[in-house]
Amino acid sequence: MTVLAFRGTHTGAYPFGVLTRTKNNRIVFWPVLPKNADMVAAEGKVGVIDHITLELPNAKTHVTAYNAAGEPSRRGATDLGHCQAWRLQRFEGSGLAIWFTLLVNWSALADQETAVQRCMKAPNLAEAERRKQAFARHAAQLKIVDVPLPKYVIVPEYVYCVIYFVTGPEKEIKLTPDIFLHSDIDSQVDGWPDGTVFEIQPIKLCYELTQFVIATACPPGPMRRDVVLGFPRCKEESKS
Image 1 (cartoon, helix red, strand yellow):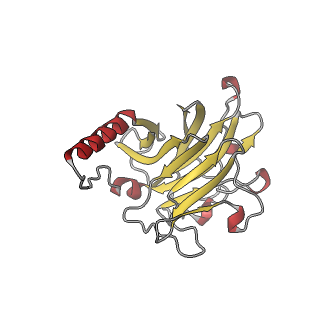
Image 2 (tube, rainbow, N blue to C red):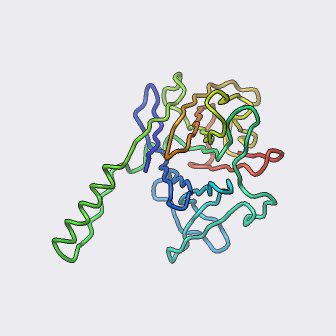
Image 3 (cartoon, rainbow, N blue to C red):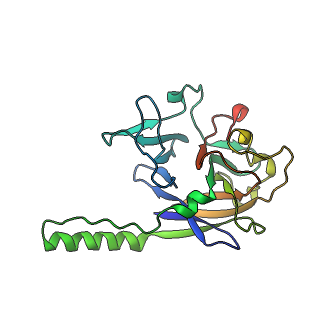
């Protein structure tokens, strides 16, 4: 399990997601959520996304939320009325494919609980000790990776992040502004005029035999919501 945290030159580290890989060859990402978010999905709605799953064999993505009974509700793009499934979007000649985009309000990052305590009763001392050891083993395997923000940023309004899979050899990896997708950003951010110039800060991450490039930016304007996720469907109608 790997915790990803935004870290700026003038800020501390703020977790924004967790990566895991399952035994059936899936990559799962748990995004940061607003504090006290209502996790219950209404009937027929996606609700607050608990996690994002990429099935590596077919490159398809689905999201999972939970209903009031605690049952998972898994949805893909076609479940929401789109003609195309959410898939990795490859860019020829770049060695990269977009998995998803993430916009997160800085206040949501700063307000999250980073130390959570829960009291749970064990039936006996032996079981209590077993549980302690299990948590200790889990904590020992936890890895934290800092994802840098652009160096000029003091305290941003929000962070815009694009997560790519590396699909080509090292020498082919090339991140250019035209594949840093933000075509639908006006629906989520106020005050981001067309033609605005901003710095993009990429980092390469190797995780469980899979390589990623995570690119961050902190353009102007306030977000309308705390957390927004975007998924590509196909090259002709890619949206963020």
